Length: 164
Image (cartoon, rainbow, N blue to C red; front, side, top):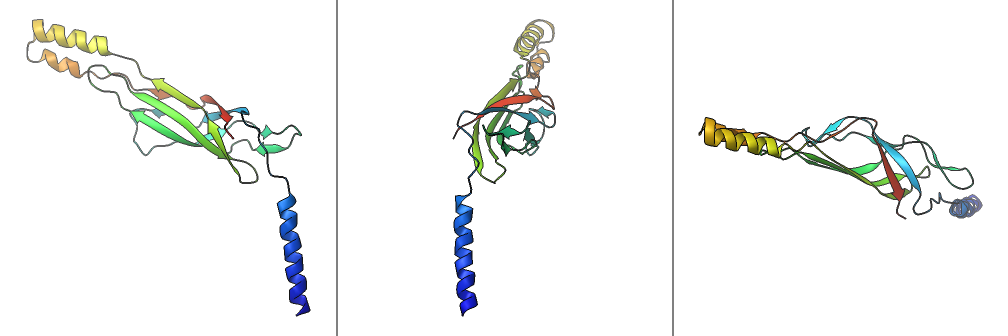
């Protein structure tokens, strides 16, 4: 019976000691960079989602590491494929959050948007000119010329900042 009371008392003391440990405190508005690991194109498969990681150790004012180099970043990837009549593809990366060394989630703000080359003038110029003058039926098919896909190269750095 006494052993049980001692175990409960020590367990209670240990729980209180853990609660007194300082949590990682990353000030709001702390800026740092994240890196894209692989090439991304607006014409790749929808389920393709390369890793984005933190660049460098993020430290507090006392020099304690709060976010380690290489920590994964959660993000949204929005892709729009290039379309006919020369409309280009677009890619948008919206960073959401990452984790501190003690496992707390840190919300992030930062995004990157890329757009492919617009080929609207080429598609309209060739489609209408060939469609009206040279090859009336086949020329209008040139209106189906797509714009170029948007691309983000591996190693691209994206600036983010903490929200809370």
